[in-house]
Image 1 (cartoon, rainbow, N blue to C red):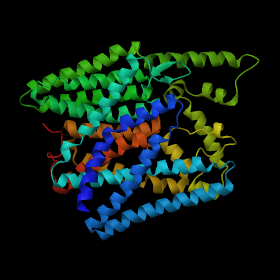
Image 2 (cartoon, helix red, strand yellow):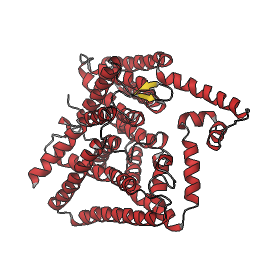
Image 3 (spheres, one colour):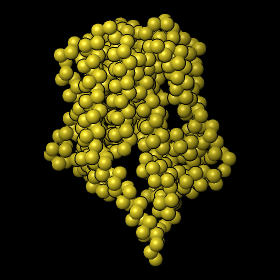
Length: 463
């Protein structure tokens, strides 16, 4: 059994590299009008195997108190999900079993994989082979995404990010928002890995991967991913400047400061020519057009009127999510006590499946899906992790100015932030795999830092 745990821990590392291929294959199947459940089917199989891995790990670990607590949490989570299903089957206006069960299954992905990666890091750290896999697998996965994006772009086979504008590209990946979230969350890890590899001053070719990732983001054209690469590069530059001030030998760090500054400048110069710039212009034009339309006899419908009346900056950043929030909030306000406690399931209430709309702001969708009590239970691991990491950040602030810690902080912060801004992070398995693996890695390092009072330098990018 110990051999299984070791091998499966390594599988979990390698599994990250295959995510872009799985998503590209799903996108290709969709383009050919084939069944697109292949990706979610594979991920659900892996989730079941991973649950077994966790159980085996707990048995071998022989920490009964910890094991009972973990198993108790998942039993409570499952019980909450069953209660929610029963309540919504009885009270929901239109209950579609396939939608409700699929959504719940995808929801379980994040807590299972978060715990699994935490255990995998513990297992691999014992033999000091953890840095052979992480963050290297993240770096490779994003490189695969960049290559796919470039091939799709130059062969003119990309999906459009905004089909109604025919703007932006998502390569062979069908969901632009999910692709945007993936690149956003992983970008600081890319910077950390590349900069650590530049420590000899001769490995500048690693920075080509950063340039390709930035180009991919500019091709996608989504606001969230663009803001993320600016934030990631800008924060990296600030950290490099701090290190430059502290350094005795300033030669290498001076080169890194210049490299990051040039990269940030390159993003600024490229912005006007890329899709993300045009989407901002089109948003302004659309608001202007709708205001004109409001004065005509046809006028605007209720949702269009709400969109026009929303603050321009807010409506641009959230892309109409405020309207979906108002509609879902209205449904939730009318729900009975049981639904408010345990949620209204997928997309609150709707009369037709085509009318079902998520708010696409993860925390809001989770609240409406699971209710007040259910949301607290479901988000408990994320809340605990956030509090623990914030506490570690302030307690060990002097360590936070290394590229490892600063980029981990940036990546985790972007994960939590993108879950609110663009959604498709926590409950989207294709994205959450990146988020939870990075979060687990940050938690593992933070625990070692608190326990030993020393930064675990052995858990870092290989030289």
